[in-house]
Amino acid sequence: MKDENKHQKIIQAAVRVFAEKGFYNSRVSEIAKEANVADGTIYLYFKNKDDILISLFEEEFGQIVENMRKELEREKDVLRKIKRFAITHLSIVSKQQHLGEVLGVEVRQSSKFMKEYINTPFIEYLNLIRSIVLEGQERGLIRKDLTPGIMKRALFGALDEMARYWVLSTKKKHSVSEAALQISDVFIRGMMTEEARKNYSEEA
Image (cartoon, rainbow, N blue to C red; front, side, top):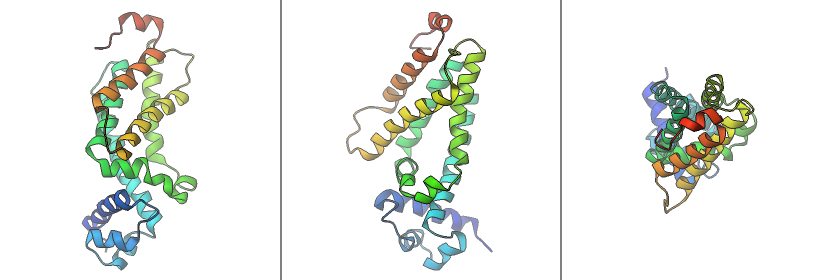
């Protein structure tokens, strides 16, 4: 019978090992040692290293999606939702740097993850941005000539690059709030209608 606590210990150990050594250079035996379990125990829970990475992503990123959804529900103003998304996303990375490195950098080292895995949590995450854009268009606050599918990837791409910079850089030149506010402000000003522009201010 599988032990849920042991499963979680292995996942958390994998986060630390992947972040320290990189996915490509990490070994299952190193994850087992970090989790304080026998090598064979890993294979009771996971098929291989790629399976550990995919499970890690499903669980950890799935939780991030839920947390982000709750954060956005607290905000009623559509344009402010964009700002809240940016601040929340970058805060997660800055507070959990090992996890941020694995989710933002190391997953790209797994060919199975990139080519075969249907990334449902990530799609859900992007669609949170899409839903904001659609809501803004329905309320006449965001330009209807913009495609929500393009906007969701553009905003995430900007935030993802900023997050990767923090993860890989030894010197953090910009604060989370500074980066989040500047990125979100550029997108808000670029996306909003002329009518919305009359009422928008940086403090909004």
